[in-house]
Length: 123
Image 1 (spheres, helix red, strand yellow):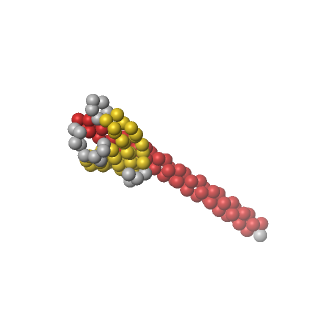
Image 2 (cartoon, rainbow, N blue to C red):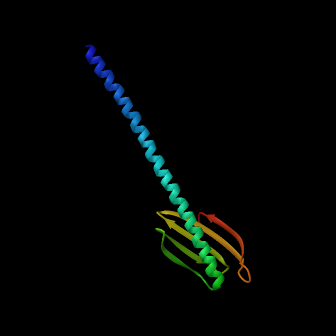
Image 3 (cartoon, rainbow, N blue to C red):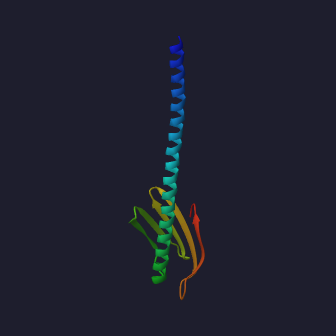
């Protein structure tokens, strides 16, 4: 009888330890996923800024520049759209993380004047 009680006690303790270990591993996996998502989101933000600066340089060189789609930039892509009133809209996609930037330009020549540069959720 004493051996049976000891065996049941050990099994219960091992079950509790197993549950704690599974909980910790699940927490670690979710933390790793959030860290990866944050890194990908940062990459999308930097990619959007890169494409926005490229669009502004092209707009400075050619006042009729209306935008383009740039595929395969560091495993991401950008879509640039320039409205008639010099509003530059950039959408960058990196690993399904999407960042959008809207830039309002009031003057292009002789020097470019940017009224606003902001990250937006929708255009």
